[in-house]
View (tube, rainbow, N blue to C red):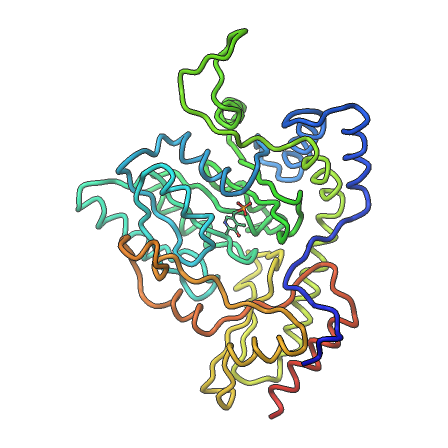
Length: 382
Ligand SMILES: *Cc1c(COP(=O)(O)O)cnc(C)c1O
């Protein structure tokens, strides 16, 4: 055990140096509330960054953003919503908050994201069973854009709106268009481990000013226009704090730099594993895809590595105080979702079995990379 070595994290917060100025200004002006100049400023920063004339509402988390999208699409008790199975639970939990039923769909091997064929099979079968799904939630996992055109074609064919889970993909593009601008709604996350952070937070990307206003309305307890507190609908306390938004404004100044540094980590792993048989690094399938490489991930085939599997690598890195983590456990394999319908084969299941996320932070140093390299080479030299 090399416990004297400092811990190398999978992905840790990386401040750019300007965040505290925005937070200090909030203190000076006493905007210590879930509204104020940083909230408005962060929203317009995101709108300018994303382009496509989007309207953005910042909220308390990415999960809250997905929930608000479902509310606006009138998803309610007994409705069905299709969701990529290979994802973090934040994609799927809001379906349950609405009393709706998640219909899980497998991934395809080129991007590890929603398989358009399994998606169509799922839609046809749900329609045959009596219900047209109310929304589709595909995910750009680990920053890798899903097959945007193919998934959109299926969604359009059956006239089902897309809620794009872009929680991990701010700064990624597909055919030069930003992830987070493809769905009728999109969710971003600024949790502590994401490419930029506000300590915790998220955003709902909307197609119109009216949809954004509605998101703000629902995220501030659905208060009617009246001098007193009056409510005709159930709302949520989901608005982002002006303090968090100040951190977000500072982080926007370094977002592109963070993307560059995360991509540099990915290139480091490409080089490192180039000559190691049986290990594949998740990489863009074509020029159409540009990943922020939020997390660099590998797939290990023990048949080609003389038996070294992902769990051995994970435990071995742990003895060097280097954090790594299995890929997301698919939702259809989770105890809490075991009774929910699932469409597809074993792609997501195999990814979970053989995949590992490696340290990917934009704040990793040359020393950190050396330590990772030494540890990895050691296990493959045995
Ligand atoms: C982080 C994440 C979310 C949820 O975001 P929070 O801000 O943590 O609520 C949703 N989906 C995916 C794929 C995520 O990685």
